[in-house]
Length: 399
Image 1 (spheres, rainbow, N blue to C red):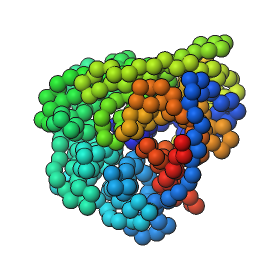
Image 2 (image 1 turned 90 degrees about the vertical axis):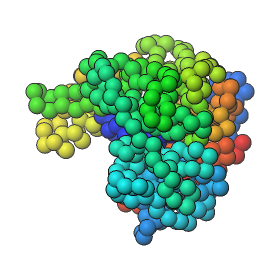
Image 3 (image 1 turned 180 degrees about the vertical axis):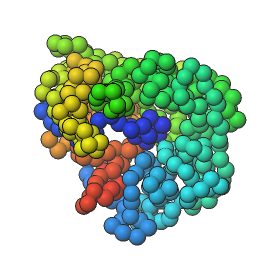
Image 4 (image 1 turned 45 degrees about the vertical axis):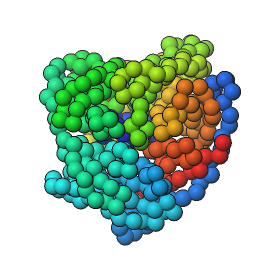
């Protein structure tokens, strides 16, 4: 799944904006790629999806996916629809509309595939099942109450080919910050919601942060330099992959992070430990983020900027170094894509591991590209055009 795509986590508001993080990371050096024979790959910008006006014009894009015939589909919560485009970028149709009836959405989000059936995750209604022409074929919907104060019920995320359902027990930010819940849990259930197995238990440490100014003003959300475990699944939902990216301590010249691939019964099928040279999170980096985000928060709420900036600088639990992986994606061929360092000039490096988690390639992609999905031969992401209008862009990968 994409870092903001096939996961309910992507729907959570961030505490800090990407612009401030990009600015703070601009001076960071490249993180070395694994030295076990990975090749350098190149990309070529090939196709744009999204028109300047009309039904093919796009709003905020949550997720992007690619059908077996090359058609591109994307979810737009603001328009309450899924839009479909031909492989050459021509707008084809809208799928779904606002409502709670058959074939309708309230909050369309993550997109996955069950063979040639498009699965649209609605965070209120469950999973909508559609054919490639937009025909509605049913819904999988359940909400299982949880205990322990997580804040949300277990919800379905994708149907599986063997008849099971991948489900998530999401955790409210407040429950994680208070310590009431320490892990987020991915489950396997039946179509009716009966829990069959636990696939992953992900520690929440390093995912969220909270700041306060005085007694009345407070803000909480994703940690600005989050180091919590990342997870991803390919569009076909054939496996899960997790990256444990606990940051290095101050002064460490070398550190490692772990990558684990599990099957849909929770069994580990591959694991790797990757060495890297940590990049220190300096006081200048912290100050840059605090200044940008504190000022923006103050402007939005009408408070004085000084206390807001100081709150960010002094209250966020900053790690000693940047996390070694900043985004994670998986492809249907079993490959795993790791965004290794923050923005450096106009491009950023991604390392590619094969199905056995051995390094096979490194590719540089535009820093401004919000990568949503990878296929064996291409990368699809969101770029902002004139007036910040989004469009999906395909980059062919040359190995």
